[in-house]
Image (cartoon, rainbow, N blue to C red; front, side):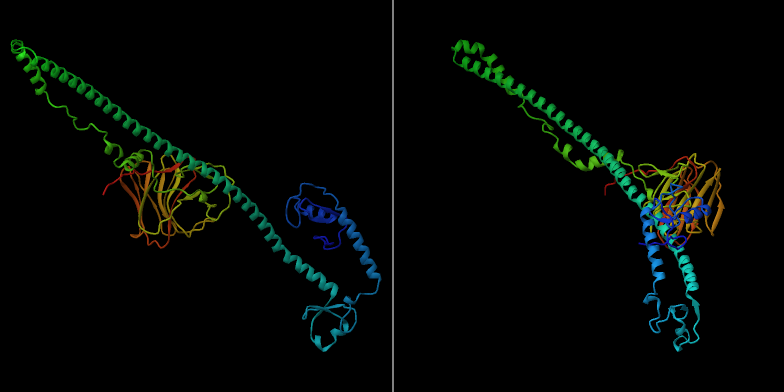
Length: 461
């Protein structure tokens, strides 16, 4: 048990306890709060909710018992621990060279020749003061750790929120795909059954026609056989009519099934998955750049598909993760580029304060950025191409930009901005890029900025 007040470094007198469990002398705490009116704990700096904290009765009783014990010890002969182990004299001095208590005989011995000494009481005051000063950085470190704990707790909560939100969006996307595939399946099964019904009706009609033809031929055969059994005169009288009936059937073509009588299986099954995939082109959207919500400055909000950013003015409570911007209202793309050519458009119409460009991976996210980015920005109708310590140039446009196209050729060392609507180049940066670059967007305006989707073309080769 520690019986000493953290403020006066003496045994507690009328100790009181704060909600953070730290105890102090009542008078020491009140004196501290007179200097620090925020009413923080002198140790952990947490704010106290009570201006008159309760007495720590248990600690008070222990301190009184401890004080009595000390009084008895002072009246009793000095303990052996207060005596010099070499000379059995009381330890009254502190050797600054050996950093230990010594007696008067030690001071005059050869062992301590030319050493510096202080009275023990003075040495205690000095070293206690020095130790208290050493505690200040530790207290600051503790306060910093408390802040880190709060941020990590926020991060843990944000992880669960992100997971739940992302799971819901994944399910929604798959529900759309399931619905599309279900509709496609039903449409193709319906087309198959309609063809089946149509061709089944046709076969039934042909079978009915054939059965009637068979019945007519059977009747003709029967009637002719009967004519053959009649008398000569009667036979000759009906002979011509019988021959005409027989020849009438013989002149008719034999029944045949024309082409397409069977189900067109190839039409229904041929390249089925490819045809469905091609048709999905109508419902699938592709964006060349996806924004990373974990990098967005707390004033920025992203759309659910991570392609639109808006400055909501009100700062959100978000984890202070290392990727997140804090000094600029900026968000970067989820993927960086080390090589190759990359093109994307950003819709900027009606937004009066924005910046679009690329930023190097090594650029700090928590403070002012001195270099490492290439951009075009707009403010109050003015457009400028800018890269710190290299370029700051006005960009002339005939009419306000609706979209801006970013063309990055890393291997060729060029970064171009153009107006895709007028096919006009606005500015081209030339630079030898040596590290990964990320697309980025900044905005101080409440009008959203959006990455434009690109058309998907299915090619066969």
